[in-house]
Image (cartoon, rainbow, N blue to C red; front, side):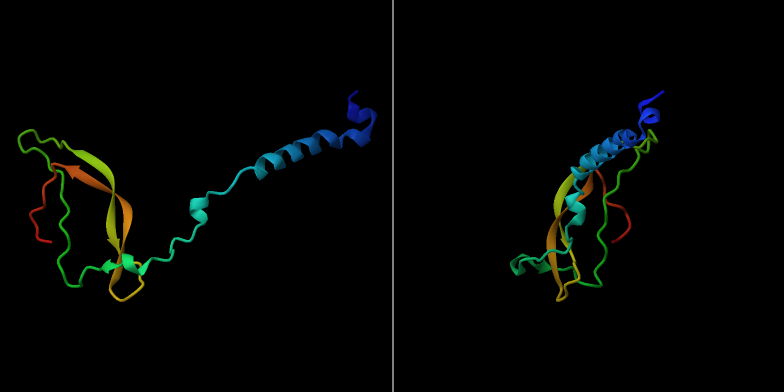
Length: 115
């Protein structure tokens, strides 16, 4: 015979205690603040740089190439943060520098095709 069988008015105490403990634990968890912020923040007009002109050839991206004798691709890729020109759609041909992650190939060569 359990406590709940003998006296039913105390059967809710263990379940309520577990629910209160779970609520207290979950209330301490905060949402990821980076996902909540507005990505389009105001930009200081002094930070504007000119955007790339239309009609220009695309930039040729360096490639890691295989050794012709060994027929094996060897290369090192470096992950860096650099300032890149970004068009935020604010008009007037104005872009802003934004730090972005990018990959750079060590000893990479430019492709043979034109940009």
